[in-house]
Structures are given as structure tokens and as C-alpha cells.
Image (cartoon, rainbow over all chains, first blue to last red; front, top):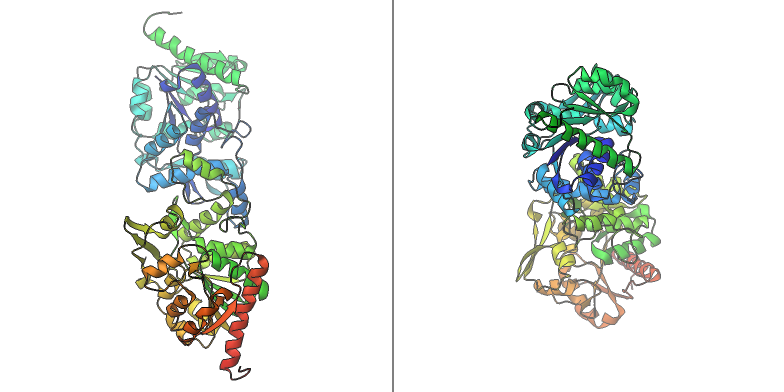
Length: 319
Length: 319
């Protein structure tokens, strides 16, 4: 069993790669739900959907979110009816949100709904929301407070960030299966996701960070930062707001209390010494996942780094 | 001002015809909401939508319900996700239900939401729900109780009907504007709609039947029954369940306490004497609206029947 903590588009890419490298049945994804929101009266869980769709082979390759080949007829009519349309839901994608909202209203938990939807789409991996308690990532900017989607999609993360907080995080319990997956897996991976707004909420849920510290499994992350900049998205800005250096070593610092190895891009070889000062092994790889082959090779490198660490801990295969 | 009480597909056809004969601005439609239901977590108002769409030029001509040229991508995905799909919502149509549900959740009344949607679609006529109180038409069959859409769409009205009741009707108040429209219009029309399940709920709302009895405007109905059978739908069966003869004269009997004239099909000329025994004038016309021209001509005949009665009441143009 391999467990991966994930959120965002980089996370979905690595998860797809992992599913080519290990059987899907042996994969558990613990997914950020801090980006969730209500939209058009529906409960939207963008990170859960991206992971579900990518594992079902349904994620739009062109857009990196939503359904492959989706149409936007409903959206066009919503615009005509005066609704907000900056968050673009496709017609096929809509079914997922309608069904989730309906099943939640029927009393199912987000865990149950996520299993229902992913199984219906033929996903064999286990996809777990980080929590069944609502957590909302709020981004404080000089012009006011935004929810994550307002900041990320509507404002295209162009506004300055003062701080980020996760409403509800102090009451959030880990969803069933989450702590167990971290504690009993052969390896725990952190996808190259934004450490503040994708991995941050997961680590903020009571017990998860402790489980990462205490698990006997190796914990390996992939840096989402290459050469001082995020591969995509606002990770660098958000890290700065949290006094983290926007670099591979800044990622190492953020995770230093539980991380065993950090996979960084070959371009960042110069960061290795700083990373290893935190007691974290730096593993070089090509981390830009712009082709299927690159996703598979990165997934292999990450799994290999975890196995290497496990073997080393067990006292065999020492370097 | 002309006010028309309406529901169902026959109602939408006559309303379209009326909008060709009088300026839309001078038309008020009082619409049945007993057929409303919750579906996929959304509030569906089929009769309000049919009237809105037909007046906006958006009603599917092929299907007689929903949006012209609509697609069904979301529906196909809902099926894949295990949702019920016998009530078929198109992608464009979905926007109306999403927007209605959202605005109701925001605290607007159904009257306000209906105005918002119809104005956004360019409708100039005034479309009023019969009530802002929820009323649900329940059909009792030998196999159990169904809501109207279950009976009409899912079962295709093939099961026997013991009785029909309108849950919530005793608490329902007429929506703002409804009584006033009936009392102050030049003419009040009843579309060729099912007298039990389309017009019945409207007449059941407190004060509406009294307003029809006491208005000084002529009240003219079009019979939905031709030659002892409904033009479409289960009107004949439902009338029998209510001990009404499924005929033009049965319609006259159902409305005899307030009706001044009943427009019946030329094929039913033989019913005229029975109808006039109720003190209701029988007006012959071609009532099958299978072409645009037929809709317009029937609308003209109905408006003419109302004017004739008004002139007669005023003591001019007596025959």
C-alpha cells in the first residue's frame, strides 16, 4: 500500500503516474478539501474530483481540471440567467457536483459520497477526503478576504497575500481511514502540491501531522518548486506569506518534522546540502511532468526513493 | 389585460397563440405549481418553465417540454453515477432549475424567482405561480401513492387512479398579483389544461375560485376534451376519478360556478345543449393546436368569445 497526500493539478499528475507504476488497488489518496466551496448551490470538491477523474481516465488533459471533452451549455444559460460564471462547470462535470450534493443532503458523509462516485467511474484506488468536517481555506489580501477559488480562479492569484487561514480546521477530524493509511502504508508520499493551500490543510487536521511523524513508513515529498518558482500556481507567493523560502529547501523546512526524503528537480541540485541539513535526503529527478512519460518516471523515482529509505532503515542496502 | 390560468402542454400552446394575438405585455399567466417537485436536489417547476420557455421562443417544439435543441450530457453522467434519470433534464434546462433553487435558497419567493428568470429570457408577459406556498399533487393508485411526475412521466399515466389530492393546498395562499389579475382583467381564460391536475390545484388555492365567481371579467375556458377523450395526457381518466363525465359538458360542469363560455371543438357541437344548461355559452372552434396557425386561430376564437360576452353583459351587441 502506498498513501499519497495530494491537492491541485501537480498532485493529479503524480497520482496518475503512480497509478501506472503500482496497481491502483494499492494506492490510497488523501485529498485536500480546503478548496471546497458552494457554487450554484452545489458542493464542489475540486481536488477530490481531479483525483477521481484522473484515475478514471476522464480528466481533461487540455484544461487540467474538469471532464475531458466536456460541453458548457448549462454554463452559457447560467450566464443568461444572471448567475456568476467565473468558476466554469461543464455539463458532464455538473453531474458529479449534483450527485455529491444530493448524497450529502441524504445524510451520507463526504467519504461515502467520494467512494460512491469514484467506484461508479471505475476507479480502483481508494480516494479519501482529508476530513468529513468542512474546512475552508480563506486568503487574506489587502483588498479583503477571499475563499480559495475566488483567489485562485477568479483573481488568477494576482493579488498580494497577507495570510491564509483554514476556517473550521481546529474542529476538523481526520476522515475514517486517513490516519490508518498513513500509519500502515509501506510508503507515504506528498505530491508536488502547494505546501500552504493544498498540503497545509491536510497537515492541519488533528492527528495527521502526528501520524506522519510517527509512522514507520518512509515519508517522501516531491518539491513543487523548481529554481525558486512554482511549476504552476501561487505556491511561491504563499510560501513567502508563511516566511518559507520559495525553494526546494523551503519545502524541506516546511516538512522537516516528518520528512525522510525530498525529490527535487535536477536543476536544484545546489539545494541538496541545505535540504540534508534538515536530516532529509535530497533525491534528484526530472520533476516537470509535461508528458505521460515524465509523470511515470517521476512516480518511479518517488517510489524508488521511498523503498531506498525503507531498506536503509531496515539496515539493508546501506549506501 | 388578459389573464390565463394554465398548466401542461395544451396550456403552453394556447399561451403561445395568445401572445401572437395580444401584446405579451397585456398577458398575465397564473400557472399551476402542483406539479413541482424536487429532483436531483433541485426545485423543478415544469408548468412555470413551459410557459416561460414558450413565451421566450425557447420551448422544444419536438418534445413540448424543455429547451429547444437541448443536449443531455449531464443526464448521461448522472445515469453513470447511479442517479434516477426518468425525469430528463437537458443541460440548458438545468440552468433554470439550478438558478431557481439558488435564488429560493437565497430567500426569494417563487414569484420573484419566476420574474427574474422570465425577464432574463426576454419574456414580456407576467408569469405568476398560483402560490408561493408549496402544493404537491399526489396521485393515489392501487399500487400506492405517487407524486404527479412519477405518475405522469415515470408511469406514463398508465396506472389506475383512485383519487388525487393536493398536499398543502389548505394552507396555500394565492401568490401576490393573482387575485388582482383575476379581478381587474378584461378577460379571464382557462387554457385547455387538465381540469383535475392542472387547473384543479389553482382553483384549490384560497380565494381564487371566489375571485373567478365574482370578477366582472368574462371567464372563458377551452375544453381539453374532444369527442370524449383528452387531446393528450390523462385528463379523461382523472375526470372519471372525480365523477366528472370525460366530455366537453363534463368540463362545463366542473367550472359551472364561474364560467361564462366554453370553447369546444366543432366535433363536439352535439354537447352544446348540455353545456348551455349550466348557463354557459358553448362556442365552437377548431381546438386541436397541431400547427402555429391553429394555435393563433384558437387564441383568436377565445379572445373573441370573451369580448362577445363582455359586450353582451354591457347591453351592447346583443344577439
